[in-house]
Image (cartoon, rainbow, N blue to C red):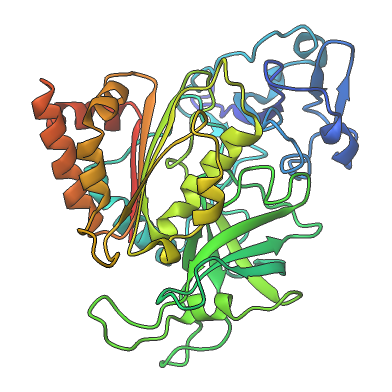
Length: 416
């Protein structure tokens, strides 16, 4: 008798969520291997045909196509079962010793990405899981050795011409390359040229500013919110390599992109979820993506509250100021803080959090509230103190609540 133990291979099976599929047929039309089919009830994916090319991901307007389950390779869900589903089956835990087969990537992240991500999320106080209802994120599909090549289809200045900050809205088109992203994820930009040591520039990460179906729906594109860096945090003249490269791009220019990255800073997808968003400057990028996702699929009877605290020096330096002011008040509760308006007291996001403490605490008490903080690292302490103060005034302990939010995947920070 042999003492050798057999290894069971598992498959990451591609499935379509019948609860949110709107039967638009884009997935079946874009699948190059005819793995997707449908009947009068459901759209389904044939595990034996699916090659994990991801071509069907970005065109899907609802994210129904973006679902996966680990299953034993010899026990994939058959089409006959999928056609009868009303909901997706729960994920079954894999046994120890089983290995994952096609469709998973074990490629380690670049050192630059690991370092930047660790610094950006350090203010959380620990590792945060994603919201339980978040869609499955794809990461590290394109590497430094084999980047995706995107074409610039738009570069628009968001801030006034006389504002001290030059902030741009840059739209990148990926053509035939599959580059699926979710709200809250980041991409890496490879600026051309060499650094002072004669080596290629490090990867620079930028949060995606568009929702999962693209800046323009049904087009394979995404957008970034980029500030031209001309000085360091101490005010000394320094030209940011990637930011100036991006801000100077013209329509038709090519950009090498790696990623996408990010598995935690993701938005919830279940009905009734609330978004409590706090940002400054270009930290608005993921907030814009989440807001636009919610706006495009708006279901007033099902959607939870969207509340935004957004800080800048002046209205002229606030990205997306015009579009924000035109959003319906019943859709989003917007609170703008300006710290350098002439003849007005300086106001920061933490001041407005205190001013709206009753509503903020109501959201914090709701188990369906997800909190996101993005922007300059200096904002973290002020916001944390504001939460501590308003919780104390309403009979809550912020430290206890913070730890609970983090553990439940409802508290996410990315600062720089």
